[in-house]
Image (cartoon, rainbow, N blue to C red; front, side, top):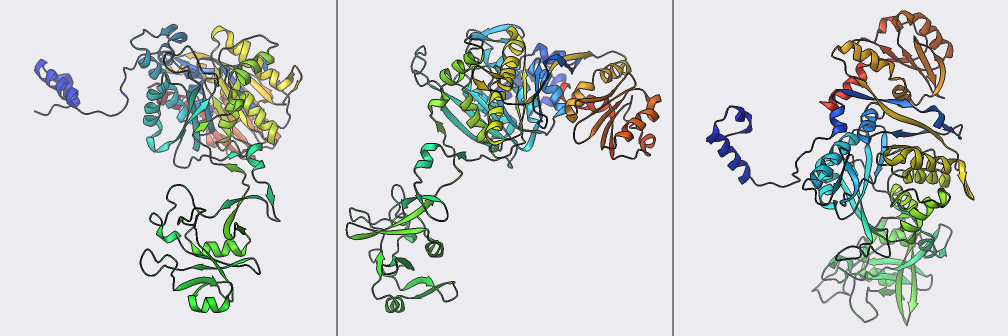
Length: 598
């Protein structure tokens, strides 16, 4: 009998035992854990999260800059709100979640999770899964997620991210040295590293080259009219460098010493493998610049004093060239991309390796700037006048370089989210990047206020970076501070709708990026930025007055209309002269929350 899960409710005892046996015998691959209920998640089934602004913490120091956001509250609630305001709008997510080391540094349902808790991994995975799934909806199609972690949960989180994003979108895992001295408290090894996992939202996501360091730039000390360059031996060395492995890459390069020019490249070899010098044709430039193939006899008549350089190393061992494409070699030679030198009586061929804007990132990062003690803990102390306010902050420069691997390096208007904001290193890194290249990148931070972290660490750090501290000049930027609060779901759904609309103003302003208040009364509210208006109509009896106010500003308008249904009252707004869109509230909010909290 083949028993499936579809009819398990109607099974007798024997059938249930058979089902258990079948399930136990199945082969499995992947991550399996016991999902543990979480209070903050369960709360959303009866209380809908919204935003409430803390106006006195607003910072406005850059008239033309974007508005950055700091949301105080459990990050699950913050992510729920962002699913309404920022779905598909985030370019980069950078998170540094609790590492679940079991040292009473992480709570689950208000209880510390220690190393003896039998459900330690399940609780941590349950927490992470819900938040990462919610955050994935926020990423653009080419967006990326960076997650830092250490050995305690590296295996679990890797499988979880494979499951959520797809193994095909795993873009890389970096080991980064964050403690050069090593943690001597570890049992077997003095651990000095942690990991950065990078996942793409889709196949459109990309890894970007890291900019060259000053040391790397020094290697390109030669210069011509095109750029700086260095010389690389054109003869291949190392792996796959012998003719047996790459037979099509062994041929002569014909050098004419009088005019110091490469004038030909050997064609296909003839005869046995040992006859490596024998060829019946030579590739040369034709009269009109095309690549032609001529006989070896005709070539020698044209160039009687030619030097045929073979890829032989200093020990007389046969090697191969870096490229096998003869046409590519000739065209690059004509453009001056090769240098031929006489070394110890024989000629050697070198390729001009030109300076680039960056280098492909490696999977091991070692740099004194990544030291979390020097450039994390000590930097934070300096920000707070010598006081230690946070344990284990990230190195500012490690976060900056991580962001540079993403499109945040070249795109100066990206949005970067950190929903485990901690001390606010991600915000600091974004502001530093903007300072370096005049960018207008936006950060969104989410953190709870456990032990006063949001109010006493995260916000003051961002404020100090913007205003300036000690002898460090400030970086002008704008910030708005919000707290998550809730609307209780009434048994009478219309009551819930009315209450949700009353408390939706801040959410809508965040969604639209409009914070300058134009009109504010019980009937309607209107806000603006440099691009458009945002209007919120609460009282349907005030449609005429509301339209007059919107038309008078002569700007494109996004209008949110209170409705107990999906009705946007398009007929009532048909005579509006400005370009506009209409959206029913709270239905558009409730649609998002139904998907999240179902």
